[in-house]
Length: 473
Image (cartoon, rainbow, N blue to C red; front, side, top):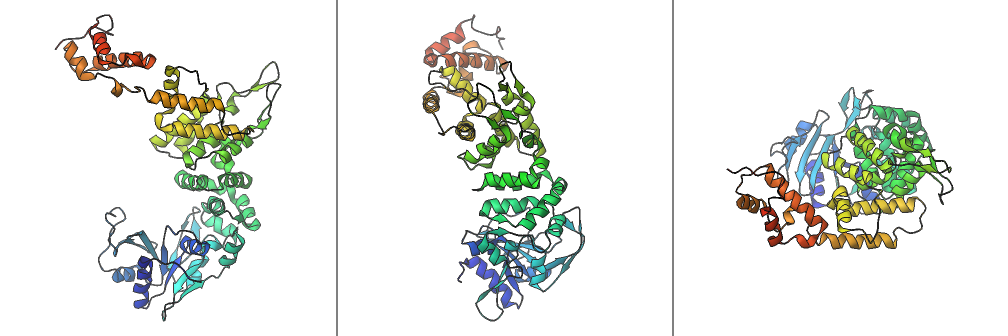
């Protein structure tokens, strides 16, 4: 079988074989080559020691914190485990000395690391068989050869994620592998080997030992995949979801029912289906769809007619998701977006809404989040059993938003500015200027026709309009 190997990768292989060292492409790069997928990260392993690797790339080495430029052949020494990074036009190539590991501590770090010149020993320490394949160049000749001691090629063919050797040992070495197995299955469209899945369930509680940042990164990769729904189902069935998202797990078993409800469904199952039907692949938007109803757990009530209600669940859910965002160390921007998509997801739609009402919606949601909010609504509708992803009211409402966006929307869109206010009233910069502009803006929000310079200048000059008496300089 032929492999599409970029010239930068061939250059690495040639440099090492020229110096009589073993050199192999390893990990996800080999897996993706065999699957015919685009390779995004090229990783290598060699029997050359770190200092020998640095001699092959003799231009010196850089610390990972300084990676400016993309000139080929500038390596940097990465860590105590023997990884040297080489900058290329395709990004950073990581070259690691083949190693064998001893016992692990804290379910992540090996207590001892030793070098080896046997590729089979290096592959034996890896997580899953599909990632424990090496592609190496013979020292004599140009032929690339596959090294596959754990039959990873067959697992790729059969579309199976299987732990290397004993799965319990693999997961106890690095607990992040628990969620990585499920993430790989979701990304690749594979099934998880029953013995491996049983070990995930047995060791699920170990995910508590993993840092929230690492869990978040794996979770978001899963949510970005084509099989995000199946991945979350696997997380739940494995026992990992209740550990990392207990707020979502609490939704299962809560049923919306009653005489007024045409469709009866479990809130947890609805949340999963909302994720499944969300049309956007942005992991944060999908995360919002997954969590949009978490406030229902604390607001569930049954009224006198026997109808289950969840009044103000979007408000409660907004507060809960702020705690989740903090736990997963989301950025301020991510937190704000996630909050808005959940806090305001119960927006009402009507083609007859006033400009002011539409503007309030846009202000609450954030102009940059409007399309994402519509995607959450699609997931919510389809996840609740509605046959169509949209309705004529939603489409008309989208048209109303477009109409309103053509009109002034922010203070910056006013036909006057702060300089006009200060010159007309002969005042210095200060809170007074902002108060006046804000008051003018409120009028324009109600009636866009008032956004003309003559009218606004007259309002500034009207003493009865001013919030307080201005102080002259």
